Image (cartoon, rainbow, N blue to C red):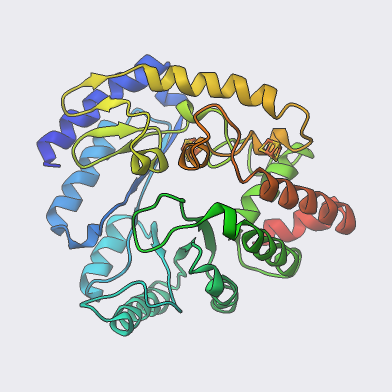
Length: 344
Ligand code: SF4
Ligand code: SF4
């Protein structure tokens, strides 16, 4: 997207926000530059793109801008990008499989990645948060990745690959769900009240439960992937200007809201999301975890062919985790759990 197209897109985005009734002075905004490998873009372009977004969205109560990168770049460029985004850089990790390569080599990928990770740690004193995509193949290494994150003190977020993901890995629900559930429950048991490292989505799920018990430290938030208000969470903008509620739906190419460059908007996705909001409230109404879970994520339901209005097919996994969190809070006592959580 050219800078002119970005500028036009931001104007269209403001129109879209207005139609939703969003009030910027009362809203905190988070913007993440991601997709492909942004560090291959010209640094001057990245600076101008960031400043355009900041200037266009200055009416918001606060704005935090960040970037997702695989850290495959020179340390000089990494320093520039780190400063540009005030250190708000996230990365995805893959320390044990050969799925990721640089110039055709998995070893070179790992060497470059770790050199840059260490560079940030030594020069900025900061450990970058990492995402780990759990697929049918990579689940084997999940435990080792989590141990490494704990050992080196960086936060880690587990993301389950979509079934229909066309990249190097996918998650086959029918055959892999039991192994996934076992892995999450073991991770939860090994982490709770013992580790000093944040592990998501477990921390996020714990925060939801603590919020229900009266904790206001994290605010009464509701966001992905546990929301039935997809239409209020945000947008994901593609390089061609097409936009969706989130990156998950953008990847699946469903519920396109229109195109921000041409200014075409479609209200049908908003109607569809509102229908889901109502339907999930009925479908999951008998569940003791509904206030925390909200029926999970619409994109996973769509990915598994269950449509827009159904609860997340990973329901049984979420139910097990939320139930176990309830048990652990009871076992350790709310005050002790809050002390531990606040120190993470
Ligand atoms: S755990 Fe299952 S039934 Fe309960 S709210 Fe989540 S999706 Fe609905
Ligand atoms: S589909 Fe999932 S990721 Fe997308 S906005 Fe809804 S809950 Fe969030």
